[in-house]
Length: 79
Image (cartoon, rainbow, N blue to C red; front, side, top):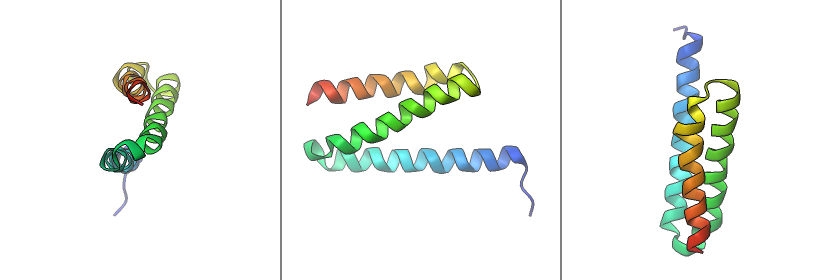
């Protein structure tokens, strides 16, 4: 069965989001020892959001990068 380009992109996006969610949950599960894990995965969210905002749609900056940045700041402040 042949997938359209859009279907492939959505599949990749869903896998990416799943990996990020798993990484963030892992960091939370580790507690304070998981700060480095949370920082890494939130950094990934931030970089992907900025890249997407620059290359795909500016809206991605607000929908993905902003929450990622806020969460990253909160994790850093909680240390």
